[in-house]
Image (cartoon, rainbow, N blue to C red; front, side):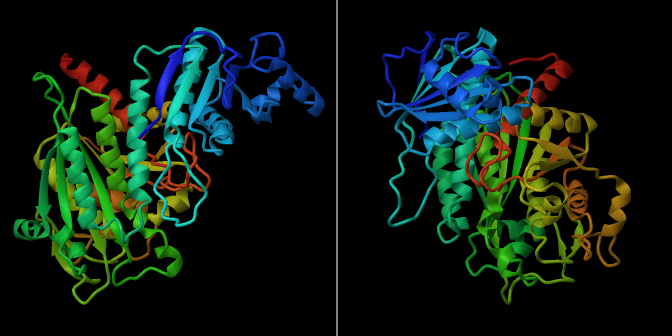
Length: 498
């Protein structure tokens, strides 16, 4: 549950005396004197004692405990910097307050009207996503409390920052699911949680159970799932219908949901297997995006396909050199059993394609080679349309969730040529595997506009951008911004609006 928001367009009244106050103001060298900041003389004295100019606050926020026991933090935001840099700076300032687990926090913004609204939007969003406590399973833990109330001083948004709240709710859902331990989030319990969420959000819900997928010929998904002792693997289909009969555009979201990945017969090392309960993050991001789009009431229909299974080593598990047949009829030579994600996505993408959406976006923690290429500060995107690539990068800048576009030129596919099947699953050498994985997936989307996100930024130590936890929920906020841009493109092309 996210904190409630109370807004006041008056400047902060120092008689309120909150226990935790964050003061945000634009670039200035006049302290004291320009904005009448709370405890401004204390701030000025501290800067003078440290021998720092006010501009130091653009690099490092300053916190102080006042005599009345209150904790105040001052931060100067430079709007000429990137959104990512602004989010990172503001998140670190916010964390100095949230680390004490207060039940309420006050935010005071200063500057011109545009600056105040911008600062408030960032600050409220960061307070929402970092003020809620993720699941923990410690018997004796420090008392953690979720943030319950946010008081905003200096500006009012008539919509109450509804779009930002929707993004925060989606991000928190994605992180909360990803962090759950693998004995708690199994395909069975995951399915139960999704079904409850679908009922509460009024989404259409349908399951493609393993027996049904086997009968349908979804051999790529079944190959991965058959190693599990229990037949709880499934592809879940959710549909969110936009309000208004005139809305006839649909985006499909597809997510990889491997609840635990041992690597199969090509078993991972202990170091590599640790954390593999997070291999379902792609499905969590797709689900979080669906929730955010629903809460934001975006004027577009959304299909959501979640491929949920585990990848185990067992006598029944698929093996190297197996040849399987995917749902679209393609035969696939298995090269490596730890490249299972692209197999379950292949059949999920085929199901999504049959509904003929206007765009498909798939999400997956798919390849280690992308982390080698990018690290964990960016995620990689691949697409069969140039305009989608351009928009993806622009949205990465505007949302603070940065992406890098990689090629999928046809000559890469020589590495996937097989002598005994239509295509190889991957190459044994593992060179440029992130590109080969995208080339492989492209065969299962027909000619529908498609974008694949390889989530290398799903985990970044000590947080990333607006998010303070190691699990970042990367992709939800980017997706909402991206869908909004796609809606503009579709509107221009058809001349139709909601």
